[in-house]
Every structure is written in C-alpha cells, then in structure tokens.
Amino acid sequence: MTLGLDQKMNNDDADLESSTVAPPTGGQADLLHRMGLEAGHAAVVGLQWGDEGKGQIVDQLAGHFDAVVRYNGGNNAGHSVHIGQEKFALHLVPSGILYPDKLNIVSNGVVVDPSPDTGILKEITGLRNRGVLIGENLRISDRAHVVMPYHKVQDALYDEAVAHTWESGTAIGTTGRGIGPCYADKALRTTAIRMGELLDPDRLREKINRVVTIKNVLLSALAEHCGRPFDPFDPQVLLEQAVAQGQNLKSHVTDTFQLLHNTVMAGKRVLFEGANAALLDIDHGTYPFVTSSSTSSLGVGPGTGLPVQTMKNVIGVAKAYTSRVGGGPHPTELQDEVGEHIRNVGKEFGTTTGRPRRCGWLDLTAVRYSVRLNGCTAMVCTGLSVLAGLDPLKVCVGYRYGGRKSENFLPDADVLAQAEPIYEQLEGFSGVIGDIQDYRDLPAPARAYIDRVERFVGVPVRVVCVGPRRDQTILR
Ligand code: IMP
Image 1 (cartoon, rainbow, N blue to C red):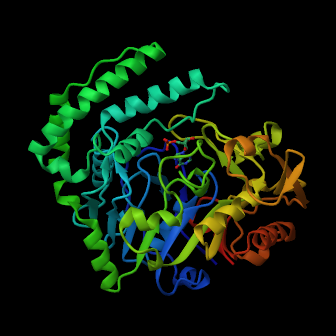
Image 2: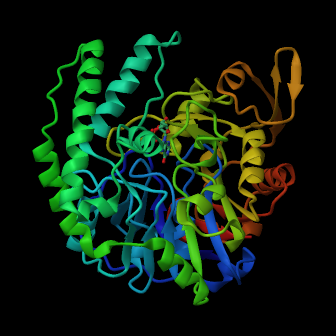
Image 3: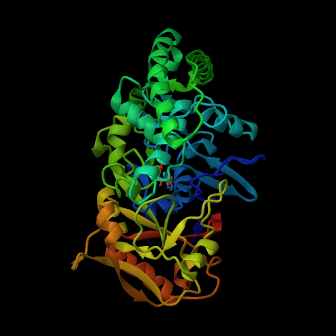
C-alpha cells in the first residue's frame, strides 16, 4: 500500500518556487492505524542531524489532525512538498496550511523572521500567490520571539569570528538566518522583542532604541575584528519596518497558549511538527554543533505551554543513511566514492546554495539515542532506495573511544569527534526499488536491513520510504 505527497526535505536552504497548485487531499486512514495513531495527539521529529524527510510524513498525517503546530526553531528549517511537478517549500508556516480546513499554529517556542524579503511574510505571499488560502487558519504566538535584521548580521559575523579564533578553525556553519542570536536575546531578555510588541509602536520604539544602541556597539566591534565593513542600524528604519510587518501580521498574532488549550479541551487532535532534528538539540545534541532550540518532542511543553503528558504518539523519522550539513562530528561520514554515491543518488545538496551534505553510513547508536530522547512510539525509515547497489552495507552499532568501547551515543562533540565507529556489515541489495508498493516485494536484504534497524533501536519501523514521491511511501 502506498500513500503520501511527492516531496523531499530540503531543510537547510530550500526556497519557494513559483507556480500554482491545488491543495493536496488527505492520506489514508490506514497510516494512522498502522502507526497506532487512532487516538491522541502526535509529534513527528527528526532522529539525525536534519533533512530526514519528515515532511513526507507530516503532510500525510496532517490530513488526519485538526491542528498542526510548529513549536521550535525558525526558518532555518523547512521542507519542500512536491505535488506532481509543483513544489512548495515551507520554512515557518506549518504543513497543515496546504489543507484548507486545518488550524496552523506557530507557537511561542518558535523564532519568527517577519520580513517580506526573507521571512514569514514572504512565505505567506508566496503561498497566497499560488492559491493557498491563508487567513484565520494561521495563528502566530504573541510570545514568539522576533528575528530582527541585526540577528542575521550577528549570526554571520559571530560564526566567522569563532572560526578565526577556534583552534580547529571550524565554525558551526549556521544557516545564517539569525536563529542563534535571536534565541540568545530571548535568554538575555532585555534585548529581545516578541511578536506581540510589533503591534505596540510606542513600546516598540523605546525597545528598539535601546536594543539598537547596544547591537551597533557590539556588531561594529565584531565586524572590525573580522575585517568586515559594518553600517550601523538606524533605529527609526528598523522601527518603521517592524511596525509595518506587525500590521501585516496583526490578524494572525494571538495568544496561542489559550488557543491550544481550547483546541485540546474541545477534543481536537493536534500534530506537532518538529523542526531541525534531535542531534541538533540545544541540550541533548552534539553541542556546540547544534541549533539553539529544543528540537525533540521534549520541546513541545515549553514551546507551546501544553503539559508534556498531552502527547500520546511520537513518530521518529530517520534516513537509511546519515547526512549532516554544517560543522560538527559525524563518525560515519564517508569521504570516499561511497559517500559521493550516497550524496549524488540521494540528492544531498541544498536546493538554493547547493551546499553538499556530508553523507555516511547509518549510525544506529545515534538513532537509538534519539528514539529514547524523544520517547518514540514508531519510526519511519526514509531514503532506502539510495542504498541500492551498495554491497556490503554497514551500520554503526557502537564506538571505540580512548581504548574503550561504548554501546551508547557520545553526545559530547569533542568525544564524538575522536570516536571510531564499530560497524556491523549487512548484505546489500540492488535494482530499482522505487516502484515497489508492497513491503513484501522489497528484496530480502532490504527487509533484513529494516529488521536490523528495528531490533537495534527498539521501536517498530512502520513506514519505509523508497523515494520522495507520493507513491513511494510503503506501509509495513
Ligand atoms: P542554525 O540553526 O542556523 O544556528 O545552525 C546550526 C547548525 O544546525 C548548522 O550546522 C546548521 O547547518 C544546522 N541546521 C539547522 N537547522 C537545520 C535543519 O533543519 N536541517 C539540517 N541542518 C540544520
């Protein structure tokens, strides 16, 4: 049995493409049944370092829920939805927007770039131009923090300055969307701006004057340190832009805490759409090579204001191999022709910048860690077809580090960078498997691969994706 929309994750730098398309219809109820999702709310989360293809699942599931909620991250994330020849790329707007009757909530844990050039207003305009209805079905928390233009400058300069001074000469390699500096200001409090403040020009004027004075001092010093030119920000210009953006978004900004509690109390079903992925989690990822939010299902509580026990189901999505974009340890990375093969066949390049993703064997130790962190109740394995033609296949089942063996993931980035993967070899498979629609028709070694994943991580793999198209998603 197959289902789904034809789509592919392009998290790091996908962008909206022009053209018009009809909204997709819902997936099949069988998906809910097979995933044990008949009742309760659910979250979909990435189990590696991003770009796992979770959008392929979120969009299918969205049809069966009443509301879709983004609870973490910003427009560093996103996924592209391919419907026939058409493509939608969503960065901040939840996936439910492609269904006319769903409520879409950007909750307090998200950082929102409101700008019409790079942010949510651009996304809204792009979607509207293609016939997608956006009105009361999109709600943005008044407590979500605002990514301001200086955050993006700070992001770039800071990453560059760090690369200069770090012994390794490496930077985090951020997406440059101002995510880290915005969350940093949230933690600092006095230099942060929340969405609700965009609707109050007097309060905003006082705030922007204060913040911009500080930012100009910091950024000019940082720019000088990096040998870069820096034009100080004009508080009046920023104020005018921010007020205009606030007016344009006014009808969407609300108290999403109340809205979500009312939604849940009314017996509606909520799907939480995790952004980024577990190994990029600010607390539990490969720190400091992580993003700045709680990317796992644990982020749903603080990111929405709903109690943690609200969630019944957590679906973890992992690729049949590993990819990573940006800096940081990646023990199973293959800098050889196999890695090249995976990158080319899996189209592991960002769609706008063309940044090549660092590809390698599946790290089961890492995936099991993420499954435990998220409390996954089911798993989805994507990208299986990319492995066709490779024999043998290898999966990492532990590490050697400092003369010792570890069966567990090593989230400390310095430790992980020195860890040597312990591989288990599995028989490969060949041929084109992208057209297979029944799990039993997959080559026996491909099924054995999925069995091994399942046994190692300890949760059932309910769905296997053999390609990004809607007819390439196989229910087990
Ligand atoms: P930031 O979130 O822009 O600060 O980037 C921090 C790190 O996380 C960088 O290595 C990014 O490449 C990576 N990253 C952030 N979001 C995603 C994502 O959605 N997919 C893949 N990598 C991501």
